[in-house]
Image (cartoon, rainbow, N blue to C red):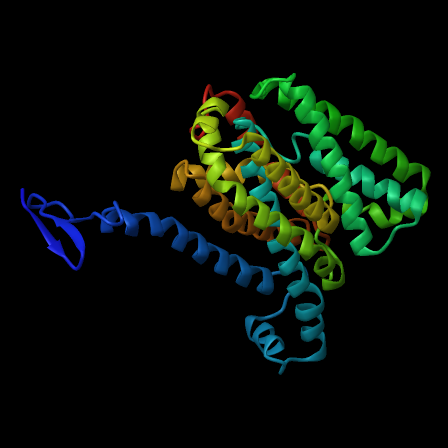
Length: 361
């Protein structure tokens, strides 16, 4: 084998039939192309899901009429359905799906628990209780104020469940953390129901929201929450590299110079903003944060940077498709997206609980 210097780099001659190695990148070109395939497939699925979200609904409109409405040439009814209903729902689904997918990936990576999820661990229920209390007792109605309440409730429950589930240890028991989260979530959901029943005005406003619905989520609800979600995604990206080291254990991470305490703060802040913001928009939607990271890991491997990026795309696809199914499943009515994701996620949870290991965790 001979080495030749080419353009300041080293090109290594490979045996016949093998792809050349770029020593500066350390990756075979064919491997880079193979790694790009899942991302391209995910983006294609996302584009298709967006198109379906704009075309499909309880009120049937032809594709030509939808296109005319999008370009400003359609009739008044078509423009109303597309711009006032389907476009805002699509934007809300994108925001909620990306947020819950990344929040679930962060929780599973940091706790090293394949069953971690904002819904299963009670984080969404905590956000929901805070919003219900604000509606009933404080008269809060502004989307921005609701987002603050949801994030506050999510933070409190995240800290409590993690503290009890970990029992003071660096690594929490998957079963103990899951049981703690489910128990807290059940109690908080019961309190939320009690508030709704005893305060009829709040119940009327919360009826669709509490089931996890994107119906009537206009841009006035979504836009004030976007800064919370954007900050959460930035914090998630900042913690991705350290999560790769933490996956090997806290001691190994410290030996590699990773601050476990700083990573914990980043992850908790990101999960709080993402889960709280998503709950403020659509109510508590379960299982998205559980299913999405596993689907991504099965495709792209264990690098947390790729998992977080893939969770954004797959989370959007899952929520968009679930919302589309919910629109036509029980015509002439609609099924909340939270119920559709439950039908998808419950079997996945059972399958994961029966496995000794899941997705490399």
